[in-house]
Structure formats: C-alpha cells, structure tokens
Amino acid sequence: MSKFLIIGLGNPGPEYRHTRHNIGFDVVDAFVQKHAGMFRPDRLAEVAEIKWKGKIFICIKPTTYMNLSGKAVRYWVDKEKIALDQTLTVVDELALPLNKLRLRTGGSHAGHNGLFDIQTILGTDKYPKLRFGIGNNFPKGMQVEYVLGKWFPEEQAIVKEKIEKCIEVIENVSVIGFERTMNLVNSIEFGK
Image 1: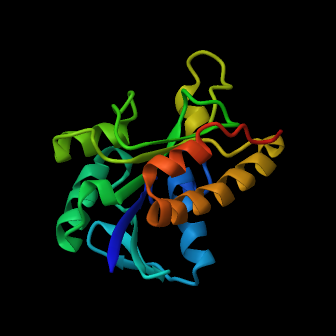
Image 2: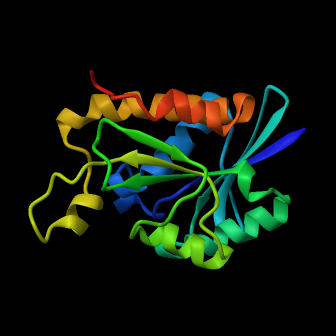
Image 3: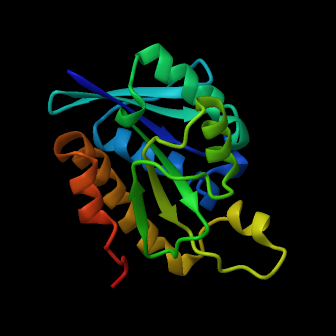
C-alpha cells in the first residue's frame, strides 16, 4: 500500500487560526475532514491517518511553529519511512496572486521561513510543494500583519474554492502522479 506524507504548514494556537499564513493547516484539515479522519496530538505535530483508494495518507500539522517546521517533517518522514517524493507540503505564497495555486516537485524556499527550515534540515529543496497564492495586497512595511491576518470578506469565496481544489490535488497526486496533476492545476485561474 503506497504511503504519502501530507504536511500543512502553519502556527499552532487560536490566534493563528484561519489566517493567510495558516492556509496549510486549513487545507490539511479540509482533506482529513472530507475523509472522516481525526487529528490526534503526537510528537512535534497533530497527526491524522487517512486510507483512500488503497493509499495511506499521514497528514501532519507541525506544532513547532512555522519557522521550525523542518524538525517535524524530518521526524515524520523518518518515522513513517516515506520517500521525499511521496510527500506534499502545503504552504502560503506571497509571490503568487490569490487566484493561483502552484504545484512543483522541487524548488527553493523563496524566502518562506517554514520552507527554509525544512530545506535546511532535509538538506535539499527537492520535495514537492503546493503553494497557495495569498497575493501581496498590503501597504509597504505591513507584510507581517498581512500574512498573519485573516482573509478579507471578498476573498472568502475564492479561498474556499481553492481549498476544495487542494483536496483534489492531494488525491490526484496519489492516483495519477505529480506531473499530470501539475498540468491540471498550475494553469487554473480561480474566481473566473
């Protein structure tokens, strides 16, 4: 039975719930909920195990805080004996507009502290990432407030649509692979 590690990046704690920076948590929550799973506290993360179409998905939300995500990823990759190309890290992306998702099998951290820590601890940037565009609609000097802020009311519908698509991406990756899934998702403009 093939096994996948699905990593949602975010920060633990109620003050971070449903912020732009925590979209990784929200996507993994939605995936687990769709498949009637439950998270439990475990080492360095909240963890849920989903079985679907002969596949196992170990879903984690690191409890290490975003900037120390690498420790949790390393632990769960090793514990579950999952190859890096069978992982998927879901993360917020300032450099992508809100109407885009970008799936890649590798690529740099692009200044994202969570991805930087994972790359440093794994010693490679060759692990798949699903980048959830959050746009950069903030005044100069207000990046932190924007990233840690809640979605604007006018963004809610597109965020919900993209979360649904992210669930589909996770499922597709396990069935048709990364290449075909990238071709399906990277060209979509949401909210059209």
